Image (cartoon, rainbow, N blue to C red; front, side, top):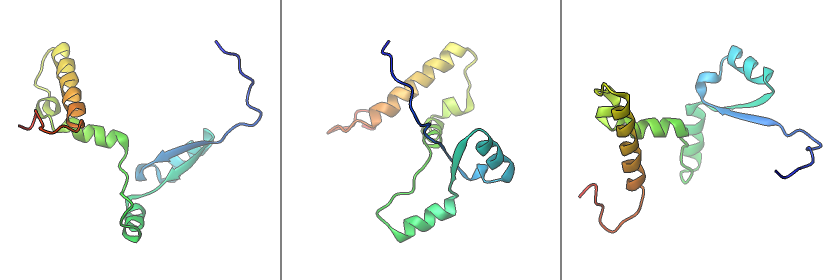
Length: 111
């Protein structure tokens, strides 16, 4: 282990959240834990995109991952009874998703 000096000033903690955390109780809890909330609703993000068309609207990482996995119908409905079969199908789906992201001259999965 490398011993380091403790930081002299505490850096502020930021929390990026979606519109579900815009309510007063949620903001009170976020600020109570010492975070600086950054909550942008979709309409403001869409307005920013209209002003600058080159800027893409961001989607949260978790939403994108769920969207990719939901395309695999067998995982979405979960027909499997055994946990090991379900976990194996999740691994296969993740491998297919990763493989689709690789740029190839001919895509093997799509034909």
